[in-house]
Length: 244
Image (cartoon, rainbow, N blue to C red; front, side, top):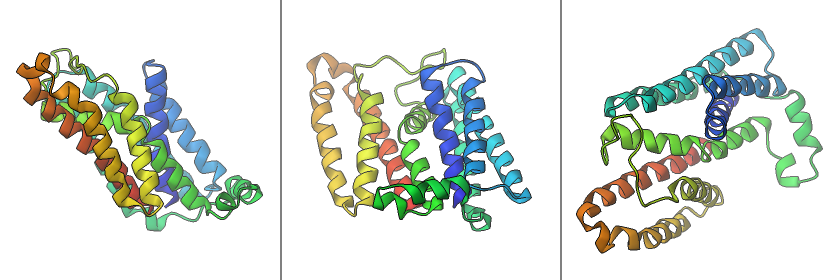
């Protein structure tokens, strides 16, 4: 599962870099480079492993480029390409996970040296997978949600390809927080406790969705809220399935 974890880390670093600094080609290059470095630190230095790392780096590059293209072009269809790239690469990594060797190298030695018992007992492969699963909740989850909203034309995207203005300003912060919370609860064996997050978010959004000022667009806003929320929760629960 080491290759899958490295792929997720590459995606996460790419999207986090893009959220901090929107320089052309920089985010995907940083993500690809980090994926290569993590693989080498995990002791994946055989010929087959290096070839796999190069493929992962190329996929990360393609992901970053297609996301930029998808958001930079108008219309719902533009968002389908990056979604297809993400799903295809994820399925491919899962299918090839049995071929990936166990991670070792400096990463394994670092984990063994930790004074935290719970972390020192974690295998390098699981550490990579957990790191990637939690990392994609931060920014990649938001990217996927926006792509789903755009691909479905939920509250039609503007002609310039961007998302429409909305009064729901906290989504980019609430999304990562709720996904991390859901994933942590699920890994802790408290999957049903995740319903607290769902209920809390609904209560927080209820005043905006029921405001008289928004009555003319309340149905559109409700669809936007529901689809975005379910897509966000699916990212967290899908990550749990991968690491469980």
